[in-house]
Amino acid sequence: MAHPTTTGVVVVAAASIATVLSFLYTNYRSKPCSTTTPKKKPRNGLIDAIGNTPLIRINSISDATGCEILGKAEFLNPGGSVKDRVAVKIIQEALESDELAQGGVVTEGSAGSTAISLATVAPAYGCKCHVVIPDDVAIEKSQILEALGATVERVRPVSITHTDHYVNVARRRALEANEIASKQRKSKQTDAKDVEQINGYTSEGGKQSSKFSSDCKGGFFADQFENLANFRSHYEGTGPEIWEQTGGKLDAFIAAAGTGGTIAGISKFLKEKNPNIKCFLIDPPGSGLFNKVTRGVMYTKEEAEGRRLKNPFDTVTEGIGINRLTQNFMMAELDGAFRGTDMEAVEMSRFLLKNDGLFVGSSSAMNCVGAVRVAQSIGPGHTIVTILCDSGMRHLSKFYDTQYLSQHGLTPSATGLEFVGLG
Ligand SMILES: Cc1ncc(COP(=O)(O)O)c(C=O)c1O
Image 1: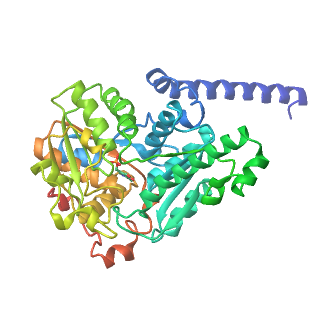
Image 2: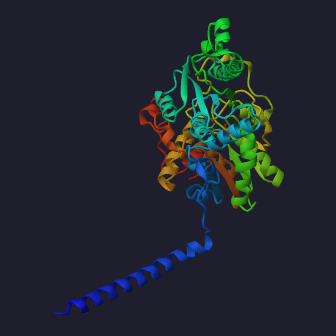
């Protein structure tokens, strides 16, 4: 039996050898990584964590087409979508131009990703967020927004031409918030008692709208469709990132459009860098943009969005497709357009999940359908970039719901890529 002291020495020596071996092993294993990947600095707060998303080679469709198909992983933004960039730019520009005061409220009429991004980002700027949505939108959407600290107003669905359309109500709410702030400023300059004697209320604005408190610092309507901060967020951010991440070696870019900010900002930036890069739109059913790009005519009189009461798009894809020309889309520089079907988008989402482990939303799936269309059109050996806008998590109640899809005749059944003509 060994002496206790000897045992202790042996244990310490063994432990030291194990530590050294472990260090060498870890060091050896981590070396290739640490020499090729520069150490990333911590991001400075939430805003700094937005953007600079990875560009992912989508192996399955790249291998099947002979092209490098790269997806910009925007679902990795903190607010879960490409719209985080837009929310940041809209708020930053509004603060810089003094159209939005510190502590003010950003209003938006949106049931989708932009509202979630605005609600996510606003507190980081010390601002508030008020969202107006149609009352037929899934209740989870308002629950998410409220959980993020936004106030949510549900209104009845009416045409965009109606003053009570949710977008128009959101615009009005910003004005009301400004009126309250302005009256508040004036009342501070006057004796509060006098104001009470004149108006009966300390703040008339507070009486007009119960949506905002009397100490409201004013409002700003985000207006994602017409506000060119949306375009600029991609022209100054997403576009340059794609250029850098591909080393300028890309042949084509394709995306679907909702507001048009993404496709416009990226296409304009890439074309300025290299006019030979081909930029394309992929358009879902019910949208007029395909016609606009390919024939210069947006829609027939019957299809005009102003005539529709609700559900303007006959598609399961969300956030993309539109029947009016927005300021943002008008900035796009496009070489052509493709049409995509709902069935193709559903099948593509399941194919990507099964083959690449990518769980993406409906617009991302449609974008990948578009990327395959471009590959088929320009042939193998090219690099094609598209956008993975958000994750499938946001699409559980429709796009990833078996019953919903079956009711709409969209049950996926493909075993490979036959749905886009690749056997
Ligand atoms: C999930 C999703 N994907 C794509 C888009 C379209 O992007 P853009 O509005 O920049 O055209 C949107 C727009 O709301 C969206 O919500």
